[in-house]
Each structure stands twice: as C-alpha cells, then as structure tokens.
Amino acid sequence: MRDRVYFHSALLFFCFFDQYWFRSTVLRVAIFFAVLSASGVFSHKTHDTSFVLYARGVKTEQDIEQKSRSRLATGMDAQALYDEMYDTRSLERVRAMFVKTAKQQQGSLHSTWPEKARPVLTGDLYIVLISTDTAYTKLDLEQYSLSLLDQMQNSIIDGLDIYKVDIKNSRHYMSLLPIPNELKEATYVLSITGLDYQHDIAVQKRLFPIEKIALNKKMEALRAPSPTITNEAKTLYAITAQSYPAARFGFDNFLHPFATYLYDSDDFGTNRTYIYPDGTQVQGLAHTGIDIVGPKYEPILSPEAGIVIFARSRLLTGNTVAIAHYPQLISVFFHLDAVFVNEGQGIARGTQIGTQGTTGFSTGDHLHWEIRVRNTRIDPRKLLLPLDRNKIIRILL
Image (tube, rainbow, N blue to C red):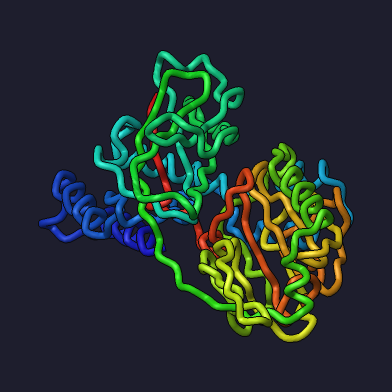
C-alpha cells in the first residue's frame, strides 16, 4: 500500500508540476525515479510475500476462507473439495517465494541462499524448493521422491513426495521435509531417490523440558502391554503413512483448533516420566504433539481444509480423528468427547470435527493435536505461522 501511494504521488508530481526549473524532461525523470527509490519500490527487501501475491493478482486469504466456508458444505466429497480448493493457500506462498527470490537475484535461480546453509531444528517442518537446470528439465520429478539419510547413507525418512510448482516458463518443484525430534546434532544428507544428487543439511537439536505424570490405577492398566492397543497403533500408523494425492490444501498458516483457548497442558517434545501408584518411575517417549485446553466440550475446528482419513474410537487415545491436509501432511486429534465427521469426508477449513473430551489415556479434559508427515511428528505450533524464508531449503539440479 505504501509503495502504491509513493508511486502515484511521484507520477502526479511528474505530470503536473510546471515550475520553470522543472520543465526539463531529464530532470523530471531523475526526480521521479529518486522518489520511487526512496520509497523502497525498487528494494525487494521491503516487499513481503503478501505484496508479491497482490502483484500477481492472487486473492487474499480472507477471500479464500470466505469462499471455502460459503461453498464447501459438510459432507462434500473429496474430489469436489479438491477441485474447489486445490493449492489455494500454502502453494501460492511457495510460488510467491520463488518469484520474489528470483527477482532479488535478477532472474538467476542459482544462488538465492548463501553457500553456508543455516541449521534446521528438530521437530520442525521445512520446504525443499527444487529448481531444475538444463540437464534435468525433461525429468518429471513428481515421479521421484526425497529421502533424508545419515552420513552412513542409512535412511531416516524416505518416500517424501515431490510436487510440481507451476511457474510460467520454469521447472520448479517442492517437497515437505519433517525433521525428526529424536535426531542428534549432526550433518545429514538430502537425496533424491533415483538421481545422483545429494545435499548436506546441518541439524540442530531443540531442548525440551522434563515432565513427571502421576498415574492412577485406570491409567496404569492402559500402559500395560495389550494386543488391542498394539493392533490399533499399527492400523493408525499404516493409514497415516500413506499419501493422499487429493489432499492438496495447505501446510502453513493453520487455524488454531479452538475458537476459545485457555492454556497448554503440555508441550511438544516434553520428556515424560510416569509415576505408577506404587511409586515406580518409568521413562516414557517424548510427547508427540501439543495438549491444549479449552472450556468443557469446546468445539474442535479443522485447522485447514482436508480429507478425513480416520475417525474411530481407540483404547489408548479414545475418540480419534485424522485429517490429510496435504498428501503426506496429516493432523491427528486424540481424546475427543464426540466426533462429528466420517472417514472419506471432505471438510473445509474451520469445520467442527468434534468436541473436547477426556477419552482414553487422559488425566482430564484436553485435546492432543499432532502433525505427521510420513509418520514423523513435528510441532503443530510451527504450522500456525505463515511460511517464511527461514523454513526454505533451496537446491538446484
């Protein structure tokens, strides 16, 4: 907005100011461009992604959200939802990021980021942007996949989908890269399966608090070995490990699941120790999501449009819902009191999927929310923010 005001002011000044010393066309042009330069119009550092989106004629997110709420009714089939909302949010920010960085480099896509890469953090989600050079322009990278390896070439995560980013006269792709919370600080390797290409990334370990949880008799029983719990875990794991191509809605700038939010009862990555009724202490796994608390029976909202891929009751997690927002990016919700959606249902951003409860292994009313990408858990709070350059890993083939 500020840039447009400066531009129009300079234009009016150029056209109508008629002092005798300003009648020289050369002087007019010089002052016109000086005003624009001072305004920052030529400095792409002052242009955020929203300006690039505006310049490219993309509707605002408010327009998109209003459209989704008015036209996507609960129960809409997945294909209709896909056709209506395909890539309207997050991918536009990726496209804008490509446009912006290309302009900053005067059209060159070879050196957008410095040679020395910033370390990535465990438990976070990153966007890998891939530009193809002459030797690879005929390849369809959507037929390949991305993997994260250690220095011994052992696979940590494999089968990460690669998606085409449609930019005019360009061949650009992207992939979602989750950084597992359990990784040690070290240098790891990004590899495109089937191509002779590898890219080193440095991983920095996040530090998390320690929490002690006292168990009652009922909760102690739920932590005992159980064939039912084991089979239910395998079933959900298999479902969330899959890719859902029709789910191309968003991977950033999510809504908070609660309209009325009170406090967090537990954070992502917390190192848990369970205290049994007899005083025995047992080290548990790190917390795989966030626990949030709202008023009793608070409505739970879908943080982004998606396809419901799981809506069942489980012994350990109670009433459970899983929603695919992007082919491999899935929200999972535990301990719901009531569930209002069905498997296979397409839902809009902000749709109520159920109510807060305390079913399953739970110490009180709350919602456990986790994000999985190929079953790697990442911190859901990171997706509540819009995409920014610090979450970009750029590679050129």
